[in-house]
Image 1 (cartoon, rainbow, N blue to C red):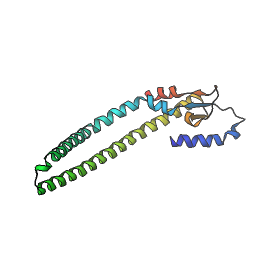
Image 2 (cartoon, one colour):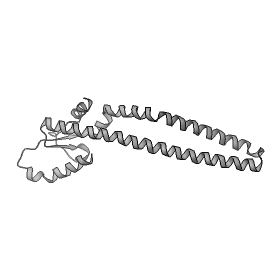
Image 3 (spheres, one colour):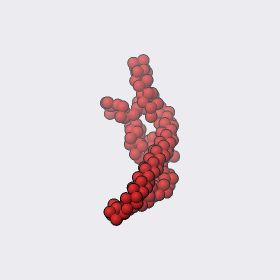
Image 4 (tube, rainbow, N blue to C red):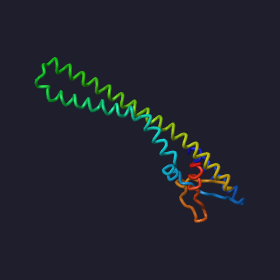
Length: 166
């Protein structure tokens, strides 16, 4: 994506030099492409399979911790001071351990999501380059970076999506 934006700015800076040559420019809507991409659903399934077990385990641990905490609050008055202190420390330690596990889960999930999205980004880049070459375009711009485009500028987002689906 960054390469695409950099290429956009370099290309725009070269426009005056290319004014005498015929330019064929089109736009793509990367948000639309990413939302409709068939790979997006596949990534969701991959991540779900990979992380569902850990997520379920964390949910069970959280429920058990909450149940034990509720039981402690309800029974604290009947416990001796030493029992109460021991139980408080145990609950604090378990809460701390749970938070560490939860944070590790979130970090791992985020890392894997980014890995998979990088793959999608590479595939998107290849599809964009192929469509640009096939269509004889000098430039494909990201629609979000274009403040104005005339009616003659073609949006090739659907073609990119079709290429990604192959």
